[in-house]
Picture 1 (tube, one colour):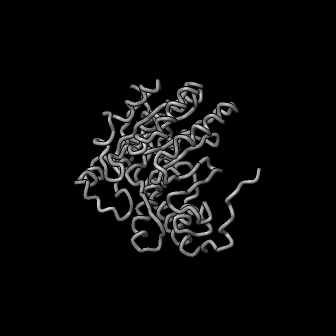
Picture 2 (cartoon, rainbow, N blue to C red):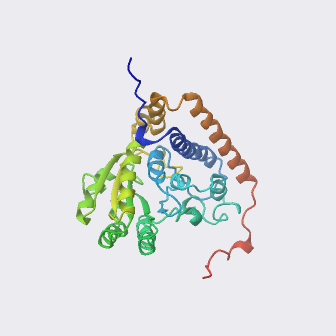
Picture 3 (tube, rainbow, N blue to C red):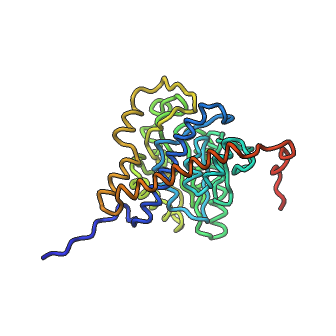
Length: 331
């Protein structure tokens, strides 16, 4: 009689951590798909850029982070916020422009921030995030906290001088900084295959003397592994890393985008390589999690999103007296 070998744990994660990963990805997906519906009603002010389809990137990276660490985001920042622990109800209220929002209704979708969670903010400036995390990474290095700074940016921002200068600065100073290029194939409506003068964004890392890694963005475990290695190296004084995560965004550049520049890749991605489907298949295949448990998480997440929308719609709007608050910081 032979002993039965234990089922290998994907990515070295136990059942509890796998549930956390799934909950985060499901929350991002449900949040974005509900916003897609709600935006059509006309009740949400401003622009909205959805992260659906890209959940494995934010989740796989941010699961390695803690309160020492900070992240900078993009105009497509909801997923990063949720993965870093920003309150979902406060986010929804912010997107609706309500006083109970994460920024008291003054920032909206593109400017959600929560410094208490190390979330430096979504950012309407393309390439605005990399310089910010150079600052937080320098502070962590000087104070010896072991913290890292992570900048998420898109393929469009990979061509911005701010990004390239930040990569150089982080390398020269040996900063604990991680640069995550989320390449969804298009900078607005311009294909990255046409606009990026390299086969891969990660290839540019060689020019700065730092590691460059290409990751399948539909595979949570691949992102989690690559990010874990880069973050561990940064915490240990090994300097920055450039990670390129490749995937497909499921919605247009912004809500209302007619997407005439794309064919059927979204339908194909949803059917064949969706990160949530792939995750469910792998973890249930190990026997660590079962479908019933995942469906229970789904129900809890959908209830949370329903409550977030209902509360946001009932929350008060900022008043004229709020206009000049939160402008200056007293030291």
